[in-house]
Length: 340
Image: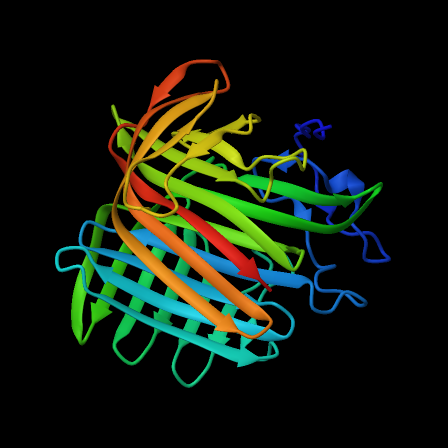
């Protein structure tokens, strides 16, 4: 029998874990602003299951940028990737190093800087008074971007539990922050490209303890429709049956939580065909224009990702039950399979 949805909005600060390192059940629910203290991750006695990361995606009229700093106990993975939208050329640098010494990740979101330090890639992510500054460099690419934070801007925080009987040995706290206005520069092979107004940043912040094998869908999009700033956040598979969803709509900074487990229809053999995400709360079509495919297989660790970039059309119901059109906003949808 499916677990009832956990739709408890959390408005006060709460610890994700108990003093013994287990999930604090008072942390189960969702929030409009980051209120979870995740300093109990990694914690002792759970080595190998702790996963921590910061992922930023920035879409500009000319380029798409992705930056990752992550640590999964036994290794760290960092990436800087840039796509030239006009030519279709992409430049990506991914570094995997043993242990976690190359990564600096704050105990909780906003509690400190994020850093990656290797010979081939450096990343610095710092909170500022008006947003988040993203700086990264590789031999051919560097970025210096500001993901602005408008006044009263809300983001979706969710705790997702994986149950084993009455216990919850595995769980994840995620913050999905969409429709952050981006400015700055992207420099490729010494040529600087301005990031103009109308560019958008998306954050995926994660702290948790994961099962070894997991498959997920994630989608996000940002843009302006009928004079309003629209942000779309959707997820599936990894949350199914958990009692939580990571679905939300953002309109001019105000978050509407979508509690329904939406249906994702797409062809995993032909990802470039349109995707259909739908339910009573939404009816959306995603039309891809680029597939960022990656595959890693390192004995016990493997990952396969198809991240499709494209355009969304359709509608989503806001918290008042009104259908909000999202026609023309850009973003991505992905399918990921990890053994980690």
